[in-house]
Image (tube, rainbow, N blue to C red; front, side, top):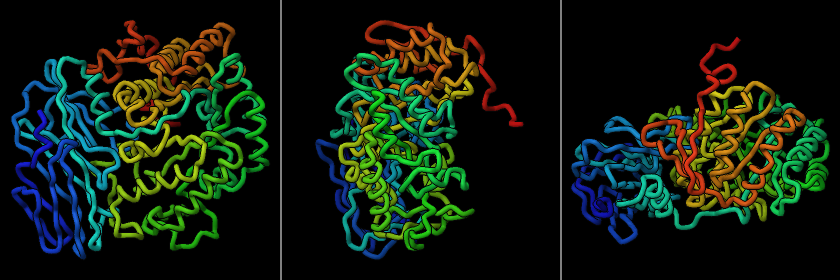
Length: 533
């Protein structure tokens, strides 16, 4: 079933001044707007040019009867939130970027190639498939000024005789021909899920000793990522820049990176590029409509802002950090988390300073600037838009936070995102399903052990957040071979029951079936739905 490579059956172009339904042809004109739909072997190319008319959306529909008993799986705008699953027909379900249809021994992928010039949103009905392209700048129409925009390349492929998971992986590879991958498998530690920002120079060195102790003799050395907690304005009021120095607990960032390396790890550092309270940054660099309650979010459509971010990246790399984790940029630009984007990332009434580019182009430009400035340092995107970041970041945090406090959260976020987005591993980037959080006895060891075994066995980046000294000798001995396995990155895993479960328990790891019991100890700790005291 490859009908999406051909012209759609109907469509509507929407601007701030009107709507224009059309019967598609390869070239169409509407006032000062030209729309080109070009079928080809690589997919259906969609290009748009306009002068002064603010363009907002393009709607395309292909009429085709879909199987009544088919199952459908969609993706997420940025990270997933424990909400990915195969479901039956649901015409109200909006699926960002791509979706899969499974019926019998056939799986069909519908999507757009990575780094499009628009946000792409799909929905299906028993009588056809529809694609919405969000061409806006913020929530206002883009002003192309006679520029031709490559809005998207639509692809669809049907696979027979292979599993739905193998089909998903093949389809992700079709959507991305140029993934950016780390030269060696990435694994190690991250201090967030036990320290939660309460840390210091010496405590980070203790973390390094802890992680290095699991990796004795391994040629591929582990990373130790210093997460939130080092910035000078820590909790003043939040985790904002400037990013030119550490706080009183981190008096010398270059020395810290050097001492981390001396402890046998590769240093990594977290930062938040688009929230910066540096008073020297002029008002023209800020997203005015988004700056409330003392928050000064930067506008990445402004060239000076990209230079600020690039200088921060160069500085962090110059300090000696070999992995840079940038966080919060989607929330800081669009004002919400992925689960709040119903259905679009942008709400309200606002625009970026540069109205001549779509939001998707501006986001991609930010990711490209970060990569260009990183030099040899690896880039890990968190709270980033994977479909726009594929090819521009080495690693991507594909799900919301796991936990060192509650097993319920780790089970919901970590296992779900690993199962349903593992198909993007090595096809878009290296996928980071987040940490094994070990801060005490708040999560039963047996549950964390299983999560660690699955994560290491998946071949994806493996990060553990371990409070030094908390593990028994037996527990430490159980983790050590998992670090060794993760250092090689040669293992692979497939969820076997993902068609019927949001938290798959049955997996195939390196050709061997494995059952995990995610529910034996209840939720472990206090679940997220309990009221806070």
